[in-house]
Length: 401
Image (cartoon, rainbow, N blue to C red; front, top):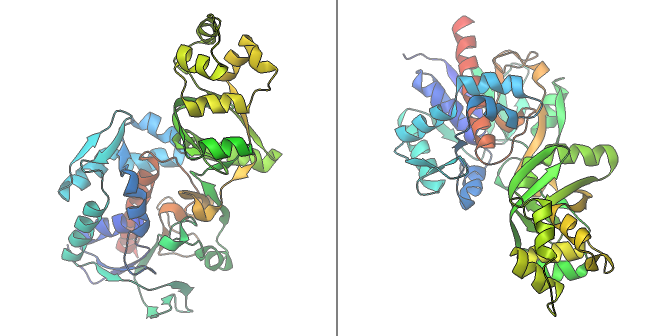
């Protein structure tokens, strides 16, 4: 199929690029605009530690990661599943594998080869890339306005990202433009973020940057197992990212949030206590904890940090602390330094095709939408799926105008 209709995509992240993939396959002329000198910069940065393309969870479990948006994402993910993501990667010559955690990675763990293949494929199919173009809104005729000029389009997909990592391109300045058009935008907030803890100087000096391996983080009935890292300002890591939304909301409501860390999730409390009750002799508490429970130095430091000198002599108290070390979180790290952001265009201002009710022919995708999900493949899959839906919505709209 070929036609003369042009679709403009503003934003060259995973949602925008995936929208372009769908549109050019249907024969539409696509102009893709990005304010940075090249597309996919945040995508590349996210892949430095190993790119989580998607996750192998079944759909019913997958959707639980989109807290408060389960019904919406049940439909979005059913429309473009993790299997569809894998098939698309394969079409670009990218081999993938499922890790032990269920996460799905490119075989080489790298984002750059995938992005190069993706852009090369889109160019070969006629997608025109316009970099160093900052979007400034619409003119009275409905044309897109950039700092480089004005562009008409038959339909538009906005995929400018949230407000995290602004140096990579997503600075959230689009919120003011849409609010002036009376589009409902929930405030952008940190997600997949670190949290602030008032550590002692002693702990910060000795354990900053040290990982706490294979712990269980408990908050308000949720339990997530993984690794966290002690930082100068607090903690970060996959388990804390997974609960960042509820934790952030608790802090906003009450000024702080209390979490409990189980340093030995594989051992019941009774067994921990029995091991600690073994004769200690002249061994220090640190050595006793290391020998009897195989606790690492960062884990021992955390126990000592949260236990008074008097309570350190009580086996019952120490054993309980190992199974439930309490930490009070005081705030989040700044939105400019976090992995992603929550908030964005509210779904009740969109139709089922992700088209703005107040702006027919304009569709929203990716982190511009009011949702959040943890890393580990869920965040990226959400961007892919919303990009596909916005592209399909644009096609449906263009076929019926």
